[in-house]
Image (cartoon, rainbow, N blue to C red; front, side, top):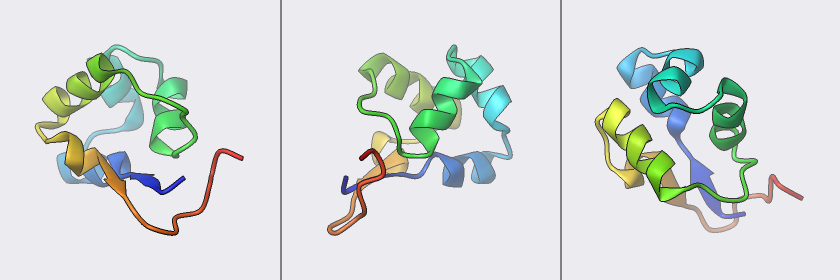
Length: 74
């Protein structure tokens, strides 16, 4: 899928762990890892909004379209 997830970039910029971000957003670390690794089939707007609030960023800082990106989901 040509959608690339850059949550790891924002985690590094904010010096947060996956576990800490998951707790603050209100999702499990496993679900955050699925999203972070680009294996999610969908993301709820409420989850996206919570990620943006905690990371103090815009949705475009977390998700981007990249032509020719490999399909990670099969």
